[in-house]
Length: 327
Image (cartoon, rainbow, N blue to C red; front, side):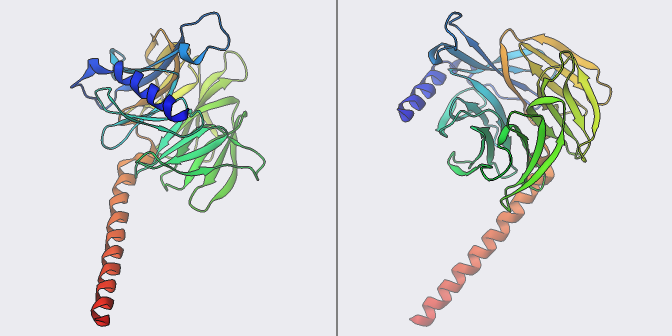
């Protein structure tokens, strides 16, 4: 049944993505995952009535095109170093080329919400109170849960520059916590903010932007935190999703059916509100300066590969010498 559903989703997306052939994504483009229910009567909305799209807006806020459409719900998107878009779609991730043609759909077994990408192309996905690590070939290489800890994983997630420390929200709460995926250890709670956390971003300067539903109506939907977790400022009147702009000084925020671009230092609305016309489930930016995927972090990956190749060469040479001696 799962394989059949995956095939149907891929077919639907393929049939609705052909109008963008030959088009590319530009650095600074904003990817907006949207959804609507075409059955206004049945609650909850039947799966077949959930229509979802990824829309592309230019860095100046102008609408460019629809990247892809499908049945179900798109949530977070990230763009890898080869220019492919990875999107959380229903119970898996979909790899989409820049023209909007789906390359493949990988079923991970649970509905996925938020994505973070490492310098080596691995994806970290939240869903089902767990974190799934997805290899660049789409296989789930590891599932992390906190069954023996005082909480479960929540929705928001990002990866630190050390490629080991995951920042995540605690399930159903306003607490941020950290987990060391390299040492397999829960690092404890980091800080608490007055938000039901949905998304977070680690900035190159070590500070964080966190976003979610405010506890009090009219309260800030986005909060800027220092590297130590102290509140630097809140941004009132903006929505509960956040993504970093490529200029390094502003962020995009979205929720309900509106999209904004905000100056981090002043809180000034630079662009928006833009009425998307559909409910917004997630946003991402092409070339987004998330710290784990920074040029410095990416540059370190080939160095590791070189050492691995050297080690492999030494191993093969040793095997060859042993064979010669045996003969």
